[in-house]
Amino acid sequence: MNERLNEILKAHTKEFEEVSDAIWEHPETRYQEFQSSRIQIEFLKERGFRLTEEIAGIKTAFVAEAGEGKPVIAFLGEFDALPGLSQFADCPYENAIEEGKAGHGCGHNLLGTGAMEAACVIKQYIEENNIKATVRYYGCPAEESGAGKAFMVREGCFDDVDFAYAWHPMFETGIMNKTLANVRVIYDFTGKSSHAAACPEDGRSALDACELMNVGVNYLREHVKTDSRMHYAYLNAGGSAPNIVPHKATLLYALRAPKASYVKELIERVSDVARGAALMTETKVDIRVVSAYADFLSVPAMDMVMEDSIIDSPLVEYTDEEYKYASQFNSKEYDLKDNIDASYEKGKKSIPIGSTDVADVSWIAPTGSITVTTMAKDSTMHGWSVVAQGKSSIAYKGMHRAAGILAQAALRVIESPELQKKIKEDFNKSKAGEEYGSLLPASVKPGDF
Image (tube, rainbow, N blue to C red; front, side, top):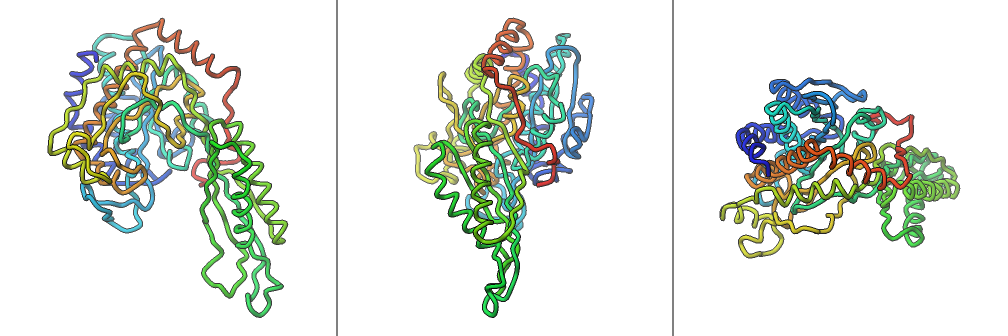
């Protein structure tokens, strides 16, 4: 790793740990990240960045910029929490601070702060060395189900970005260049209420329609590509009175596939099942796409830069106390130093992950994305154990390592016009003639869901 980059990184670690902790302590869900975004905005203002707030018409989205000219380098940050995951820090069993409240079960307190840390490191480095480049940090809300970056892409927020960098806290370290396209669709059924015992023949059950739709989709699973995913949850199960035929019931479906083009097909096939269920029950169904994510566009030359930067980054050293701490969150007993896995070997396969709106950005600018170890080996993402470890020294060490890797990767590209050209060539080849098309309907606005 560049020696001066490492010096800059080490000089300010405590400040970023405090920012991460402050965001952890104020968990806010999608599009409600008012305190979290403000914490980062004020921090960046104090360090000389030029701030533009409420970009793409989103109150909690912003961009911080420093430097000038080309290339334009973007670091992508997030800070939204997950609902229902309140948890005391460091507690090795499920223990909510406040039942039903949010918590950082995906580590976005670390994610956003680490990306911001990388931006600050690069800013100082290019200023010290009079390097012409523009560095940006994008504060991106609502990654969890809200598709914040997809809306930002739709509004052109990344159109002049040359290269983008992102990371995610994880239980292992690796390249993150494969994600599933994902769309969220609401199926809102309307029937007719009646007394379920005295005059059931007068009722038309919206709940029956939901049940029949789910049965139909379960049969559909046999006839879609095996790497497709179809999940559902009830937003409204028809009420709590069994003696009333429910006239309203609502389902939320998440439809995923490796390519956005196939997700479009899934939407139509699942929606046909919904229409069939409505026909069978003499109800009506309203169908609304409310959130959507693209599949990730992998760029080989950029992936190589990210891999080299991981390999060249200083190895994280853990104390015996940290290994013992991690063992509390593992599901089985390991040798002491196997409780945390921060290793990486060249050529390691991409870590499979669900979906992310970083993928939408990857179709606009070549995007390097990694995961970095910030937690115990057996931690379950979107679970209480990730929240519990979010203020630990293990989490901090991973966050700083991620910042260093992103900064090093960005600097390599900034300093090499040849590498810039190669990445752009690979970017166009990876598209293979396919252009980005958002799965979001034009009528859908940020925060509708």
